Amino acid sequence: MQLIDSHCHLNLKEFDGDAAEAVERARLAGVKKMVVVGTDLDDSIRALELAHQYDSVFAAIGIHPHNTQSATESDYKRLLAMAGDRKIAAYGEIGLDFYRDHSPKPVQRREFAR
Image (tube, rainbow, N blue to C red; front, side, top):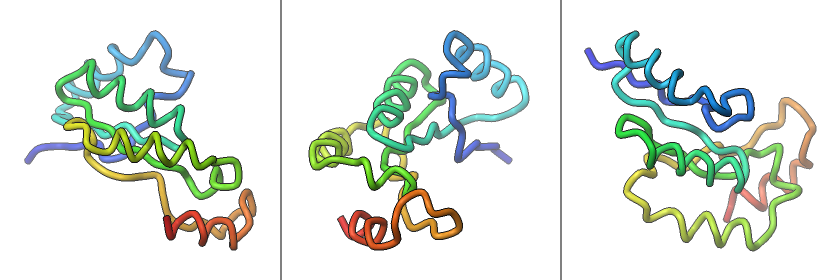
């Protein structure tokens, strides 16, 4: 059985300077592939950069529901331009998150429909 970490955040500041070690630790633990998930445009760009640095790493790009209120038209255009990259494995974090009220429900619904 191949292990795939389908949702990790090596793109967070906590991993600055440590991403290579984290990828290696995952490999030694039997993880064959990793998907680094973006929560906004900057996170998505960093996820894709990491994906291009490591053969076993792929990116998921998107705007998390909590970040939809601050997302701009330019952000969505840039994400769309990135979408054809061969190292993009998925779109995420996207969707609706009504558990917390970080972004109003109408804004989340509008942005999810994009």
